[in-house]
Length: 222
Image 1 (cartoon, one colour):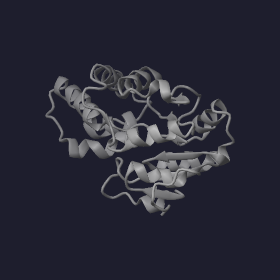
Image 2 (cartoon, rainbow, N blue to C red):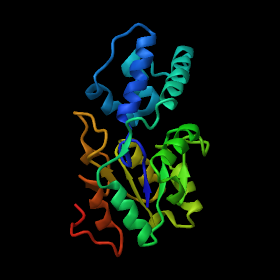
Image 3 (cartoon, rainbow, N blue to C red):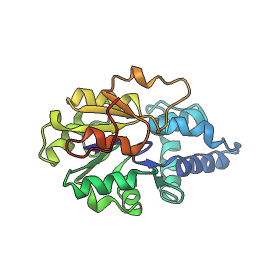
Image 4 (spheres, rainbow, N blue to C red):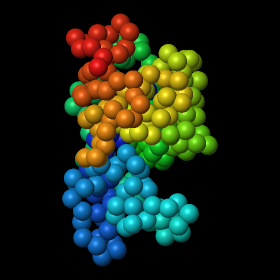
């Protein structure tokens, strides 16, 4: 089983919003409310900088400068207010106890992912951690998920991937995995998760266990 990080395993929005607003302050701009920033988190730097500065083109030199500074600011506060979503720690405990390997597949770079997972106390328990710069591609390309399956010695068709964005679901489908969209993640008001092409949806972390063979939690897949 594989999990996306931001908006699926952990609520990282408070620290990312803090970093974005710190960067806006450096540019003489007012802070944005968390409610406006939260839906952009799963879109990574392009979405955050698009919201904060109208810069979302990676070919734009100003975008690259802003992105570098944003990541530095975020790195300095990466686990200040970030927490696992309620119930996720128990899910990971259950999977570990049942000898079901689980891993993390995220577009967040290595230099930010590993410190965050260590601070959350789950890095050493993950069967694999695949970051945005681990392979030559990022989600929605299937390469990161296929790499994760190889690391765990599993056929992709036997794997389950949980994420909160359209890109997550596209990557999972292209990899041949069963996909679940996390409705508790960073969905924008206009998003329609039913159009993401997922195999199912979960409204709380514990519901994922009903999709894992041999670990019923009293609920049924939607």
